Length: 183
Image (cartoon, rainbow, N blue to C red; front, side):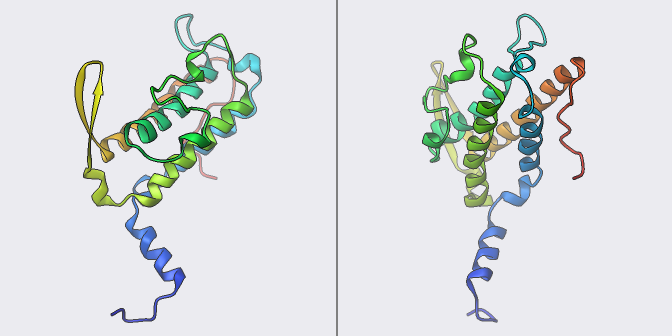
């Protein structure tokens, strides 16, 4: 029996404390910072490639967003695919079609809709769930992942591509994605 009468507000706080969101408290800022910078770029800027053999900026951003859906929805079976532009369970998305460039509005929508899938997991998953294992067949090999390893992969994947994009943007003299700027 609780020491005090619980209210719906108390229950929400208890559930929030049990989720893993606080372990990834800076990740929402990463997504916001990417949206802020990408959302104001022109089609010409988004088409820039850091090197002839590298993806254009728009495709790197699309790849970053698409990886969230692939790993969380296609591999782990989380809901939300249908609310994003990445509905192919194989992970092949529009970012892989280099002949169809995407604009800032589409990229912001992709980042925001895939971010909602991530947030849902951060809110629902508990620390105990991070040890759950998932077996994935890929390229003829059997791979074992945990929810925690997938989440860590996605967190570092976002940060990696933000750094890659920032370097390219800096070379172009454009605003970079400052992940740690205080608001």
